[in-house]
Length: 64
Image (cartoon, rainbow, N blue to C red; front, top):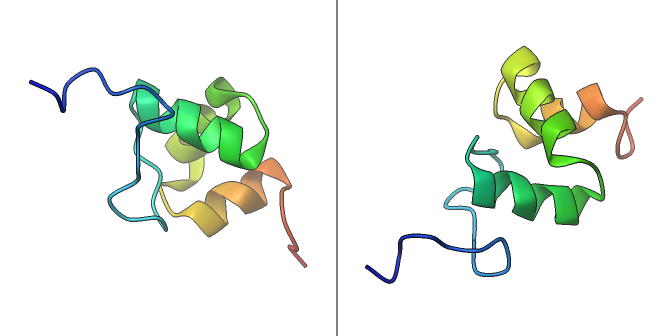
């Protein structure tokens, strides 16, 4: 039962190149990318779970 109910502080992405759409994952990525979890969720729904595509959609990082 220890694996259930992970907090964002305890969460580690199983694949750091993909963003999962679950609360603790969105909270983790919100802290990591310094943006709102809802914006991340919307970006994942629009462009898929690949981190680089989500960052592009959010205008984060060295895109260009």
